Length: 152
Image (cartoon, rainbow, N blue to C red; front, top):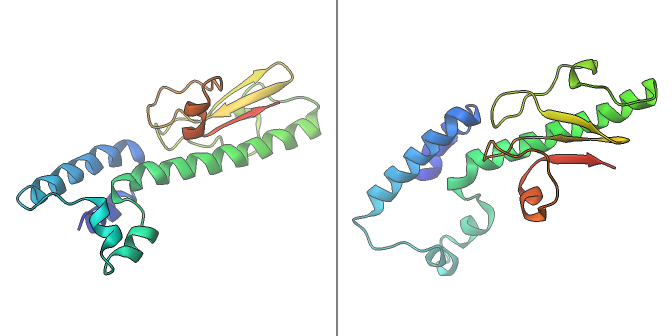
């Protein structure tokens, strides 16, 4: 099944895993092309698969979801470290390198998380799946998908 093929891919970094995930998806689609079209609604109403449909993640999104969860956790922990730094030093650091712990890596591009001071606060973010996110929070739809922490 596609889930069995995806699990090993889920353990490698996003930049390597994403193309492999797409290859697996294409192969699964090709393998299923000879059979009738399979719709998600088939699972919902088939009692044998209903529990799987409700509780199992969409196998086509495992790599993206893992990277998103990892990015959100790293951004949150780093934001807490920034608040602690300010409480001890009176101001936010100019760069994340000034924090006592190593700079967290963005799981999407394997580079450090992005950070900048803004006014009396800061913005800390991951570039996200597009690898182009710049920390702007004016588009609420984009922010809902990205790992971003802006203060205040």
